[in-house]
Image (cartoon, rainbow, N blue to C red; front, side, top):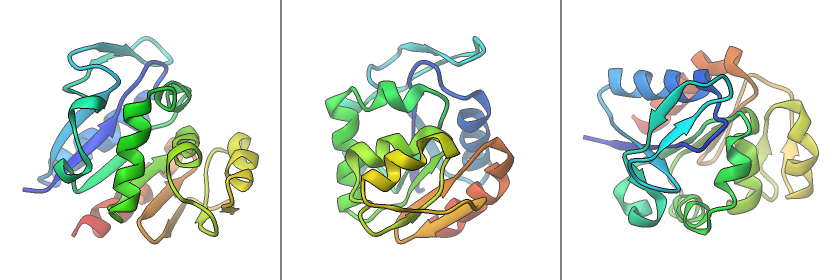
Length: 168
């Protein structure tokens, strides 16, 4: 059974965490919620609470077939964790699918090699991605190599279809 890590941190976007989590379970994948700390309750932008199943310092890229980075303001907290950045970097180095939506691109700018790659995101982080070397486009979903990006919750169906297709 293929295994997917969904990153979690405070101020996550509920739709961008919950929709991928259940859609991937529905597709038959094992899904872990990986936070900075294990068994920690993280609170979304609107107060929804979810508990991490694993700490990023306790997992490795070899443990997973893909990684999902939800948006909200949570990626700004995620990238403050050296072990979370390391996990994203190792997943990228191993050429495993990394799917980032909305502000999830912040983690890509901090931890993945996106130089020369075409990405999309929530428009407010466009400059961050361009400054990290990416080419930014305004599209619902963009797949460039192992990186899958989308803009907003409205793009979630196309975002997850691209990830499930990439996973096979």
